[in-house]
Image (cartoon, rainbow, N blue to C red; front, side, top):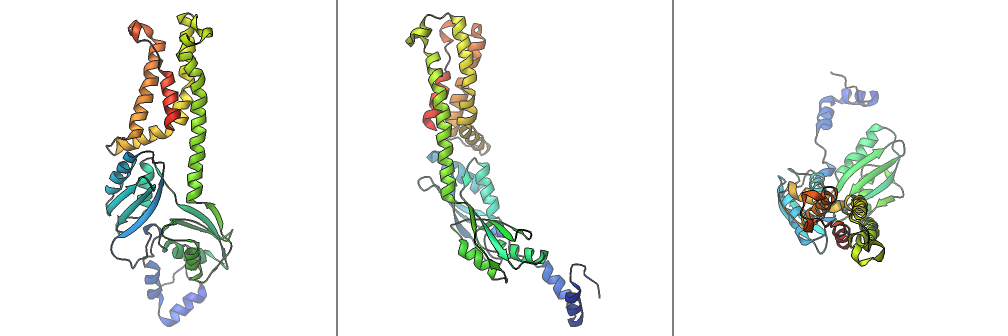
Length: 316
């Protein structure tokens, strides 16, 4: 009879007496339902899930996400609703996992409003307890990630609120013989939307503040202080405007460029593409005109830095 190191001595003697070492080995090799499939191992057929999606700015964003989801092997149907900011996906849990679906959405330049929570787990005594609790959580529908820490006696869980809730998560832990304590919410779908809103406000404020001096410099004829300045002095101010609009592009307009790149990867174009190309080319053309005016006709040397910052501020 072969000795299996991971078995405790008492367990080994019991199995040896009962002639059950082979049975225990087979039990250890059995496939445990994965968290990332979102369903139990006994489930058959397609599963339909509802995913809250954040970061969509126009109706064409839905087409970008739908095209990306449709490219996943195992996804039979994907519909994205811009008004409700949600994606409805039908998929085969045997062929694709929820984590893969969420990754594709994030790679497309958007985010999924999952919830995270920390549950206190009582009465765990060893590493096998950790594995047992993790397996129970990972087998629960809608659980994206579950990590159990023996030292802190807690479980960090990320899940989809449309498929499960705290009560179900606690029940899964208690079903394998452990008790749960007070949960510590980390972030929710509402928190995700609130963070997105605060981010939009910050980005708008940065672009709006930058726009004020840039507009003044861009239209010197309307301001007495600048009206009589010579061209060399104005050109120096325009160089300053070029530098000043960089934060508007890089920070305030970052989401447009990320969205444009994501759309390009999926051979699509949306509003992000339009804004990124428009503001990016306006800044590039204006900078080249200011630095190398001799390469352009005299009536085509006007910079458009104000367009860059104002458009980004208004659209954000």
